[in-house]
Image (cartoon, rainbow, N blue to C red; front, side):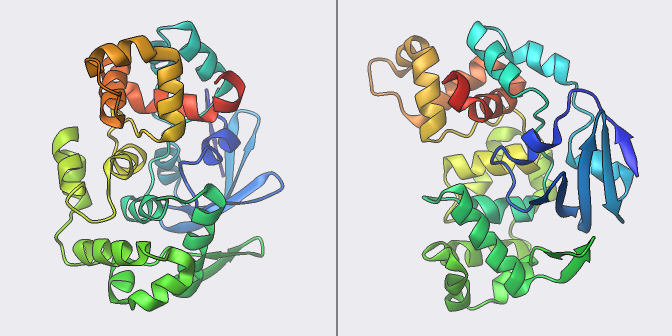
Length: 280
C-alpha cells in the first residue's frame, strides 16, 4: 500500500527526537500507527507500508494534511529560519498517540535519546503485546490501566528510576478518567497546558511536547537547553528586551517565539532542533 506525498521526508520526520517507538532496518521503519504494527518506507514521492494500518491513519500520523510550503513561508521570516527549514526539508510533526507521547516525554527528563528509547522499550517488552512485521519483533505500548496497576518497583527495574512514580501517577489519572486527552484537544492551548501541569513529572517543556506532538497545538514551543541557546544566539536582542533587563527564562524565550512564529511556532522549534548542528 502507498500514498503519494509532497514536501515530506520519512527519515527526517522519524529521527528528529519527537518519537521514540520506531526501529530502523535498512530502508524500512518498524513501529505502530493507529495501534497497528507496520513497516514503513519512503520510495521517491510515496510512503509505502506493510501491515493492517488504514491509509487514513497513516496520513493522519504523518500529518500529510499540513500545507508545508505555507508553514515554511509563515515561520521563515528571516534568513536564519529559512536556512534552518532548508536543512530540515521534509520534516513534519507527527500526530502521535497522546498517552504514549506523554509517558515518553515524562521519561525524557534528564535523559538523552538513547536512554529514553531504552526505558520505553523496556516498558513495551514488559507490559506490551508481541507482534511482528517481516519477522521484525514489535511490542505495543502498555495501556494506562497496565501502568497504573504496575508496582513502582517494577517500573524502576525498567530503568525509569525516580520517573516511575511520575509515570504511575499519570497513568492512574488517565485510567481513572481524571485526565481526558479528547477534552485537552478541544481546549485552548493555555487551558490544556494548565491541566497538564497539575500532574507531577509534567513541567513546562514536557507539557509543550505533549501538546505539540500529539494534541494538534502547533503553537506550542518546547524549550530545552538547545533551543534556548539557539534562540538567544539568533534572537537575543528581542528576547532580552522582552525580559526587561532580567536574565531570560525559558518562559520568556517561549513567549518571544510564539509571538514571532505564531500558530506554527512548533514547526519553527523542530526546524531549529533538526538543523542545530548545521546552522547553529
